[in-house]
Image (cartoon, rainbow, N blue to C red; front, side):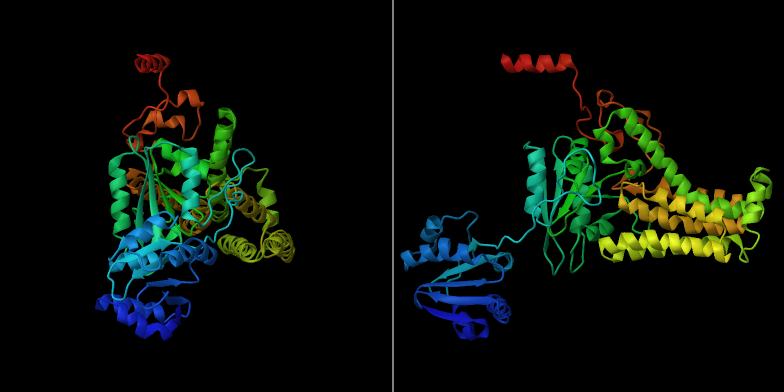
Length: 502
């Protein structure tokens, strides 16, 4: 047996090439030190080539080389039937050969100059085990989260939806990375127009390297300049399986432990999947609390600036002395005071995120207490505004979806500027601009403000409020599903069973 490594096997490999494309491909492969080529057992036998960094060495020796050593000089077709492995392909397509070798397959040629190659999958299985969700942790419910392996993630979904109607369309995105991407949907429920829209947008992606599902989300959204997210990022298999049964679409990428869900409405970003693990009245109460927390987080600081600057008359008489005493020694205008505090909060957040977990939590707590106390005692900010900013930051943490939390963090600053320029009228004007933007916004072609606009009373059953499961007979109307019924009546079920028995 003669062994070649890297450029040492250049002459032997070139003698086997039957086309310029094949020669060029082999030259690129052989330039890497981890690409191996050897002939077994002599020049008239099999030629084996692979990347040793991509294949499972034990599997290669036990299941491939052991069989080849007993066959000596037999055709590839016979060798293919004797190797105890699945998905073995016999091909002469240069693009297929390139993709499979770079995915961890072994290429076997029979005799010198043979055009047809046998591609045997022996990819090394390098992946972490499933763990508990981190960004969507819940007290109740399953404790599984997606991992970086696309096949593992598909297994988690198919275990929850064991039906043949669950379809998975696979794509390759990224001209360099060639990353596997899968679009998931349930045939017979999902609106085919939404599937066509998503597949078309994914096919139109022209970017060299796609390393995370967030790249895809930014490229297929309806409005790429909007601060409001249009696709939900989830790491929970149970969440994705649930929304697939509603008629939505899931997108998963190999190497990313998250999945995208769409289309969505703005109410979807304030709804936690844990709401469904509790009785309906508790789930509704928590949703309303989150909605109030969002409004408070956005308007608390701007209202303070507007009232202190322009509208003293709206302050209650009993509260006015407290505000006057708190600002008696403050040398800065309210807008500068608010921007300094908001900026400090954002700095603490970024510092806590970038530092290790144990250190980050300490920095956030100690930094907030020390800086806040020192700022009040030094007379740079008022204690009333400090309390409002702290409560607003706390309210923003109630958001179950991380993307909308970032939007709320940034949207306060335009409101602060509007409050400084025009007072309460500025807040109303800025709110009107945001509302107009939301009314025009769409998620994969579906209205973003549904069921508020267009007004659809049927969809209120699982939006601002969450009614019992027995009341959620139909799927959301804005999804325009092929099968809108989720709960069949007992009479229909009995008739169906009678037809089956007959």
